[in-house]
Amino acid sequence: MVLLLNVLSQVCVLALVALGLAIVFGMMDIVNLAHGDFVTLGAFTLAALQHAGGAEAYWLALLAAPLIGAAAGWLLEVTVIRLLYHRTLDTLLATYAVSLIVQKLLELSFGKHPQLVQTPIGGSLSLLGAEYPAYRVFVIVISLVVVALCALVFSGTRFGIHLRAVIQNPCMAEGLGINTRKMNRSAFALGAALAAFAGVLVAPLVSVESHLGLSYLSKAFFVIVVGGIGSVLGAVTGSALIGSVETLLNYRVDPSLASALVLIMAIALIRIRPQGLVPGFSAAHQLLGKG
Image (cartoon, rainbow, N blue to C red; front, side):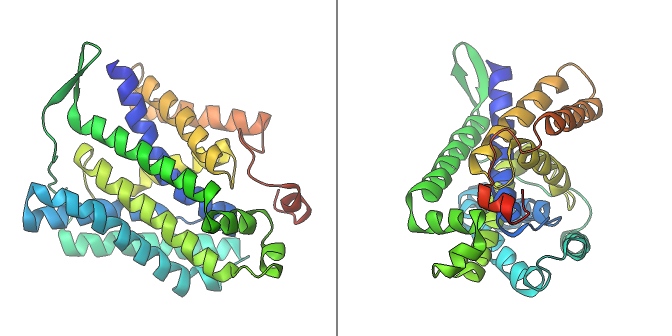
């Protein structure tokens, strides 16, 4: 039971990070190497608020971090990304530079030492005879709720319909009157908000440092490529696969070797099924050369 819950907590946090990256990558063909830094911003938001207000400031951080992440994502899209559409190499270099700048600014502001964060929920719960930290149970539950809400938004709201239309065929969507530029900015902000929210959730479980988001960035790319680029369900499926396999391997082998084995598995899956487990591109994308 403990092993299952550990797997589930890893999968849930990874799904939140990967969802935002899947939206941005699928919609705008933007490889955003600064996406992991939104996770870091969320964690540092928690550290700063708890430094000022104590452990109970965690609940404020859950609300503040997504807003800060969304604002940062919107600013990045307006000032950098919108100037570099269809220039993949330039986008890679620009977002990598932004990532380094964010990390150095955090180090200048907070120092290089790990930040102190506190768990708002102490103790443990008894689940089917196993004792498990109550905070990890909270992380699992709140992550599942957020993922479900995202799925509901994408499938059952006007915003979600427009978002899927832009992902499937941006030219046709624009011809039908959808403001694709506005949708791109909204998607970028939403992806950043999800990552920052995940940063708050994971902060009490890891060492909060300026390069915290780098490990989540690499895993998120594995997830969306294996799961299916541009597919929300693919991001969740990929998170379940990558997160569970890596967590299980960590119990048997060295964590570095576990990460390497997961990478090998991802490469093998891409070779066998290059479109991903749950393809996100339509036939229109194939005709547009995006498949």
